[in-house]
Length: 564
Image (cartoon, rainbow, N blue to C red):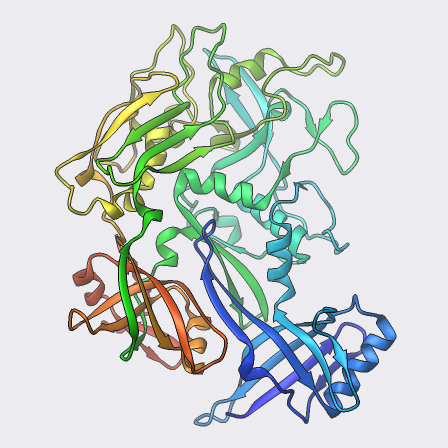
């Protein structure tokens, strides 16, 4: 296979090498499904030895700019049938002191995947002010048409108070821009997208806005240096994602945009990251073993919100609190914790309304520094918190004058969105129930949103058969098999499809989604770990085939189907 290597330095420019470096076939290749994001993150790592023109280019750069500089590298391969060069790998060369060495005939440097992914990983837990004007590396940020919006919080009776809020689509874009040093909007998400960003309609979480207790009380969102009456709204990427994930069962992954030649970050339902397209078939495997995946064997489920107004002077019983359910599983004590550290309690709306900032007093409340979800809607140009809009039914509220807020993201609703995951290890227990165990605040809330058939009850048992059809069987598959260069290309193009393999024990083919595969050398045995797919009949009916760069279903459409 013919290869082309292009080195690029931000000052010295680009160099297409006449002499290939040594070590490409010895790079360690790993693709791992991230436990937090569920996207697959690929990595190449190792060292490359550059000779002649490559050595001269690299030596000049380190001698001129020092060991903190980096060099971009792109590796292209020639398609023998089309005679077109296609980019297979891009990454960076750095002068890691554990690797770097220069001798008379070669210079050896460290190779790793793109700097964007390195920054993403290393900075995902940094506090980032939403109102920053520059990235962490000093790049000027592009603005949004709606940096913030004003939402009218509706409390008891006719009580209202305005709050500065931000949309989740803008929040994710801003935080990823800042930590990855990007001057474009990198997020693709039908979950958070809205028509003004080119989406057909508002995504299911697009109007679940974000704010802070002080903003709910009337403080303004300040610039980098806040003054009296101003506050910041800080997010950590990992924390921001996990809090939305716990409400909506989401995944996040990176995808290369070959048209614009840049990385995008996709946030979608988890099903997007477990597609039913078939990647390839592994005929000759060894050391096959099946085991139950304890990551999916949940005995206890906690859902809702860790913090809420438990005691208040309004005579209200807050339904957006913390609930606990148990499954029939007794062989495992694993807990699924989908409680959010953000808040959604409507009682806090009333506290904010009754403690408005007037510009002089400095009184504090226990909501001030907490981040809140506010489910909002556009009422003819005015954004308001949702009460019963788009609901067919809301009943069971306590109190003389109850506040209706954030019913759309109530604890039981959040758990039901995780139904396919909860049910993964309950396949033979469909006649049993997920039992309600306890709640921090008991509630009789029941609700039915527009388009829903069933009513959702907060503090009741749930029939397992009423949970969404599971995507996984609950078993983990492990085996050894070679990983070829062609398979690496397929995984790079679409890492979320199914791997088909021949099960020599049961004398049949089986399917699974990549959990992890890694190899120390291309074309040699690789250790594979897969999530076994459930509903194989349904999977088999949706298999796709490749036609050039297009992925086609058996009906020749180009839509990638996912399990229900």
